[in-house]
Length: 382
Image (cartoon, rainbow, N blue to C red; front, side):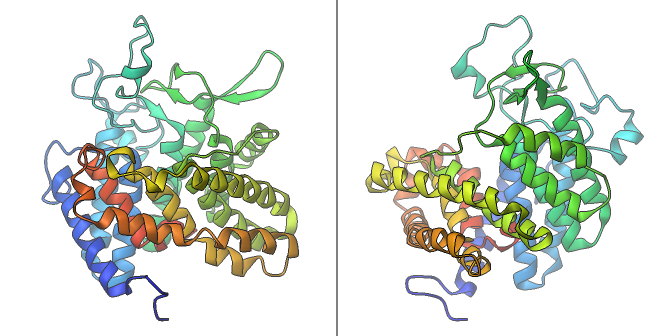
């Protein structure tokens, strides 16, 4: 199929993505391998999918091997205590051999530069952004990456690790209110023993619900209790956001909900309608805010790439819901926003915009998510 107007041919995007991911591997100590690699869970989840996509596009097994090596580095770096921590070994507390077999049973650290806040330290919102711990929405991205590795390689151990991570994360991040209702924490300590930020992430319950359903469909470990619990937490939540990364996350979830509809019929139609309505409201707010007219110094590339990645799946969504007039109408409204993806990519591919502090201050996450935006196939697959 020939590229649409303004789109780059796949051969060109493949070269750009290859170069970005080669640079990322060198910067972070993946290839050539470093004994102290710099691992960051969110970025690494996207990177795993990017290497799998390069493997799909080129047939070069070296890219599949980079994905597997990255998984191993993440587990042996973020699944273990920090070098500046008095604690050592697996953060799960498992013995060495058992930890090797089950590296995700204690969750995975974020990879932030500062140690986590100690129990007797006062809360400092500014510092907290740079402190380590565990984020639920990072863990779900890693579950997805592991599930994709399992699908591509045919090795069920990766899906099992993803499901074990789901069970560990769910048990730690969810809790019961005095009223009997259920909620989630946004950030937990490295060992999952205490909340660091008690507020609930706006889209965490939805993301967890959809991710658990994907893992359940992949087979292996039963997640039915966690799915039911997350469904209850989702009810009544407000999903509307004007943040491009948040909107992109909603779009990512719409693609996965459509896959659920294929497996389970119309049971998920109401959920898809709800998420699409929130997405369209968020897109209208974001576009109306005029962010994309600002210079690079006032924009955050990786947040915008979250949106462009999500918009890449809109065409597939529109095709899959053609038989439902209500959903089709919403999908058509969504398609009017898809040119934003190319606009965002072209802006950040310009060398002068990559000289801005907002790019150079976050180079690895920016380059990896640009690569995903240009070649989103494996990331958007389920």
